[in-house]
Length: 210
Ligand code: ZN
Image (cartoon, rainbow, N blue to C red):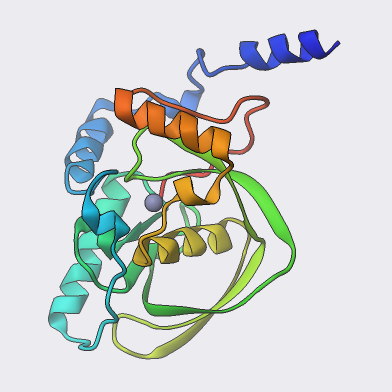
């Protein structure tokens, strides 16, 4: 019985590419260009705590616009400034294709729910890696918008997950630090060998990389 279950989960490995994974060549080309700007595992910028933004000026707006464009082209749902080597506490995200783009400056996690959720996460800075990460399901975040106005974001589900993932980036924390030991080991092997890794078993609903 256990044997059969194991076989089934092995057979459900992603040999057959689902429809959404067949990407238009033009989109793929833009994605590659965008990804060439994103720092990848091994780059010290990903392990450094970013400094608060002090000046809300035109150059910050330009930075936000650049990040939004790169995130869009990279087909990501979120991007932290540190992933571009900019050591500012600034992130952008879009929780869903039709959701508005939100820029978050100097975020503070004010509250997180005791209720946790386990889900798969990818990261633009960890190519080919998907790991399970358990995070609070609901969060409240205080921050500034790109013009310096105070904002409060109450988020749940995917939006809460993306925000926590990006705030982690601002603190030099990666999903490798938030998963179980076996998956971290497998992910590090994939990063070293240029392969890919994902949790064994039934594929869960996969979050886009952030
Ligand atoms: Zn990431």
